[in-house]
Length: 464
Image 1 (tube, rainbow, N blue to C red):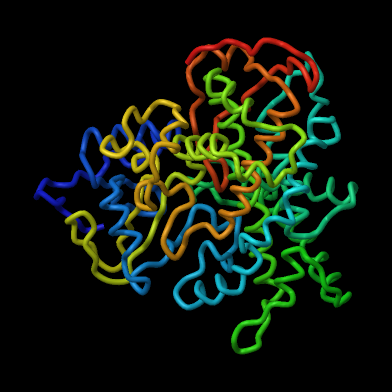
Image 2: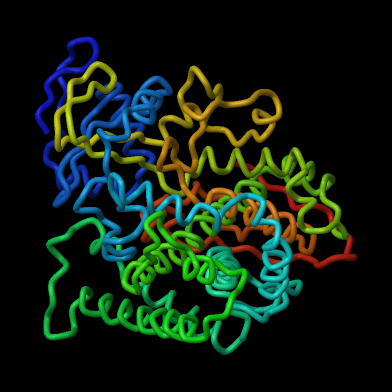
């Protein structure tokens, strides 16, 4: 990247040594970004070993410039850290006309009006997990729950039903095992350091990842072939994609379908699961917010009613502000562009550091505090609050993610009373690190189950 000065003529310092900076970012992404802004101002340069450098901004003005840049000037950067996960045909990596065509093809499957049909499935998935028919033990008084494991199981069941229409417990268990192995083998070093992606007679971490990906792809290809041969209609996303046609009448090939399905399954559950964990953590570190939210919930209400609750919506938004699951928005330029007064050229990369955008002191007073009330007091624009990205590449599954988060959180809190285990109730906030396509707590956050519906206990007291 050939840039030399910012908006006020201040020289931009390239991070040196790049590997040390990359390691610092991987240890604590948010702290690294805040440190860089405090040291170097806005915008600042960030280097990614094996992927080149980028100019980052965390200001609303910078976000507005980037997200409003001409479409023909911006493409996703390649190589991309998540390409091995989602595949080259993924909508996330599609460029130019191909991105517009594929997004138009996929958009009807994620129209907000369609999301209502998933409401009961989301609630039922939560109940299944809490009843002990999922990844963990029943949520009975005295049980200890790993929130990350539970949240992943909940959202993965939902996305498998929404995308593939899977209802059989045995088939669902087979897919869940394959997806979890696929994600767990794509380690943080493999994602951030491409030079580690080497074979060693079938025994390297890269070999294990490829084997896990091949196994998941075998399941997905069999699903595609079976559905094509059956020529039956359905309401799941795969059925819609099989029936969809481009303007010229062409259909998605099996390889293209495979990459899109893998993208939907991976991106459709990991990001929402991460935010759900953080929401439970933040609420149980702030008893007054938890008490206010419980007072708003009706355990007997239909699941869609959760979408109409103002304080629940504020809690979800505040959690997304503090813990955006995808903390950077990246674009590579195909021609000259100026970001925050810095002249960039074709091939340069620019990005938004979402944690900085969500903590800009001019927009977010007391930004480090968990205070859902701020979302009841005013409306925030798309260049101030962007948990799902923005512009023509805003997350296509944002509506489904919102539905899942609201309904899952409301169901959990309506059916149980939890307390953070001592390590998390009194200790420092867990670090947020990259996990596949999202960032989340380095380790699972654990809770003790205090009671279930109908049992009266005082709310646990804790401090932050």
